[in-house]
Length: 163
Ligand code: PNS
Image (cartoon, rainbow, N blue to C red; front, side):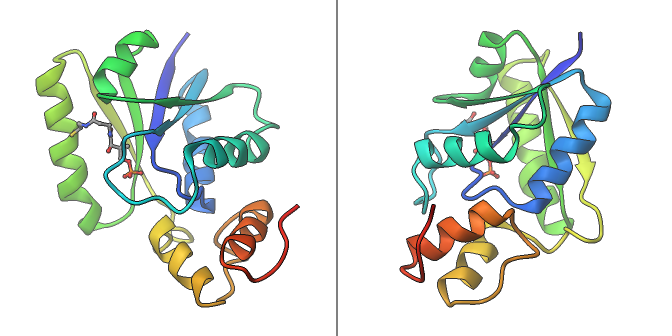
């Protein structure tokens, strides 16, 4: 049974993340989508909100588990019995950060490995940060995120009601 962890902030989950999950499911039998609790970034959605959104969005994928973790990713991987992490790679700008992170993680745990999937051309410009910014100013994010996220963004920014 091959399984991997897909870690991230997911603040919020985007269509780009979902595409990586679906492609990851072709490579792995199980995926654990893991929200980092101790991200240095100031989040828009709480970890609990992000978990709820992910659970709702990914409920039709039985081979996907949603979880959260605290502390080092390598420790969480050990705890979950895997050494493989899945990450999406969008552009040259992502490369340096991902390269450093992958090597730091491998320094911490030599058995650790990262699998990178190149983001498809329809998603390479999507980031949670831009989604938040566009939504904050009332822009249309309908083709960037699932509809539940769109609703929740509207609610967060006082532009309408969330379910
Ligand atoms: O979606 P993001 O914000 O790019 O995800 C980054 C994440 C959460 C994968 C990364 O910050 C992480 O693994 N954090 C856990 C703490 C850790 O292990 N840090 C050392 C890695 S350099």
